[in-house]
Image (cartoon, rainbow, N blue to C red; front, side, top):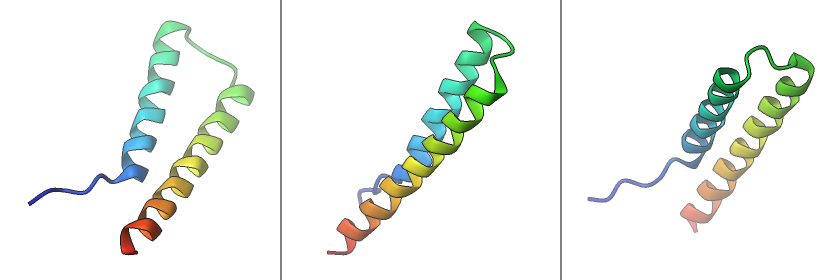
Length: 58
């Protein structure tokens, strides 16, 4: 049996890995820049998750 991809978890995980790599490469990035990126990224991941569920039910 195949397991379906959970796009929300995948994209959120990739976002946090990317943010973690950013902190390792250049410590202490500006919070005023990183916070909107994280919020926008999580919003985009949620949107993709909702869309994938809607198409999966069809």
